[in-house]
Image (cartoon, rainbow, N blue to C red; front, side, top):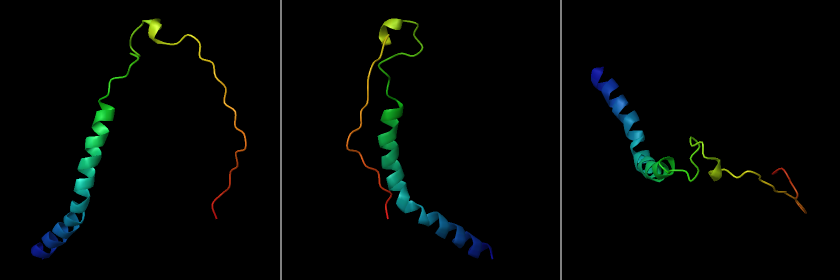
Length: 69
């Protein structure tokens, strides 16, 4: 019985081995983004880095939306 349960556990663990390569490459792509230093330091009290006034307008023309069938 112990051998049967051990074999079942090993079989379930072996199913995830194929995804380990994908997980490793995903981690290598994500960590540089997480470790990136922002240009604007949000903790600084210096207001010269933050724009004082932001203006803008968005206009949509000839835009359609359709639910997929």
